[in-house]
Image (cartoon, rainbow, N blue to C red):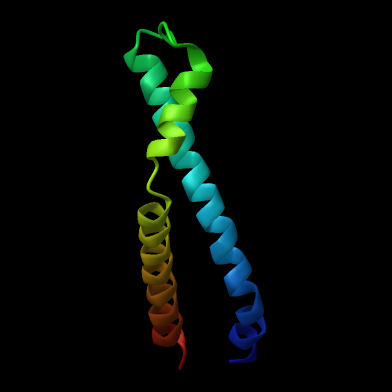
Length: 87
């Protein structure tokens, strides 16, 4: 039981890092999608305009909420599996 309690202070840091990584990955994915959808070209406006438009349209709260929900579900599943394995 003490192993889980000692990890508790790091949980908020882990969630923050996961959130930053998730939003960044999503943004990069959207930028790549726009580039490839435009025939591997940035189009007439250039890369800066495309990236600025995509970053402005990101719904960070929604992305973070989804990441948190997925992490909580995985942590709950791991906890249930650990409890099942204990005698």
